[in-house]
Image 1 (cartoon, rainbow, N blue to C red):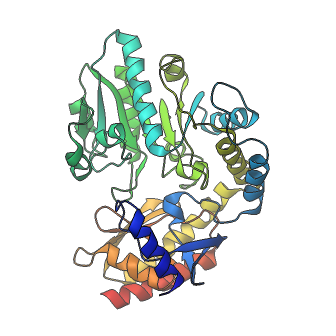
Image 2 (cartoon, rainbow, N blue to C red; image 1 turned 120 degrees about the horizontal axis):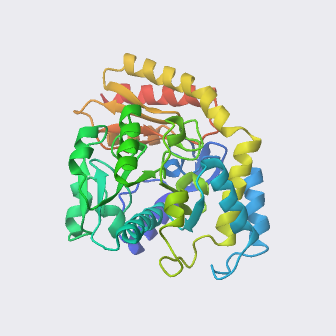
Image 3 (cartoon, one colour; image 1 turned 60 degrees about the horizontal axis):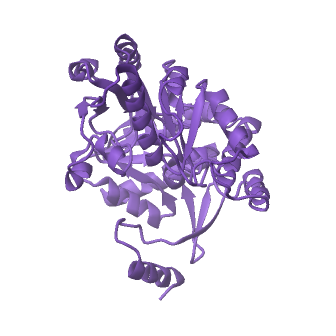
Length: 401
């Protein structure tokens, strides 16, 4: 039995079987390369599901965590800390929004955004019972509130009854959204680029139309940037590329580049008229260690012009992926923005089969809804990395057809 096989067997003895894990034990990483417990190396185009934007073992990021770990890991939100203040300032500066609440995860950020929207409407109307419009095929997390606004019945049905007052509209169909609006609507929530649903970017006209609708009806627009934010589409946040500003934004994943941290960020209207002391809280949210990670991420993004790098390489990535689609009839198209790309696989071959075969060849890729190969690499990949990915993926596709 190999080292990896022993570790996997031990894990299966004790872990709740909530994941169908790939048969690999990752042990370390450097740059965009992962190494498993048996010494094999892999090119990573999954980034821990869009988390590890800086890749692995980034020297400045690692040093910042070491320094903070030697000072203070946790103190609670009853007190101020310098990392908390610095991380909040970085987010408000880059987003142009005004108030931040730190969480431990993306799902918790969604929960907080829902509460903030409901509290805003409660203060406005003096009554409860408000509703939220969410999108079909969306994914916002697995806690009760987050799964309630997730537009896939498969995720919701086993846990019903969930949070009430949720209506679902069609993504990129403004008329569908308008048809769901009532006097009780307090918020519309959507991913700027749908991730788990199959890598669907919002149409510019749709997003601006939803913004106008929210303005007309005094409805809060919540944009979920948990996967598509933090530089992945070539802007700090994907909505900035559309020129459409949310009232509330959720972020996580690459916000901490591996340290568990999320946030919901409110514009002035929502920030001044929703959550008050006693309405919401989190023991670990915004602790000094997590906030030091956030501050380091923003600083490194600036110093190394990570967003400029994404913008520079996106045309090359798209060109290579389009060429792969033209060559391989197993692929029926590409969609996405920046370093968040999806390759649509012909329905008779499961995308998961390609992902598994790619892993055997030393390439980490993900899948998404609708039989899509999802590519969300670290934002520090090079042209050589793109070439290698396309070569391995092309080889795998030829073999599994």
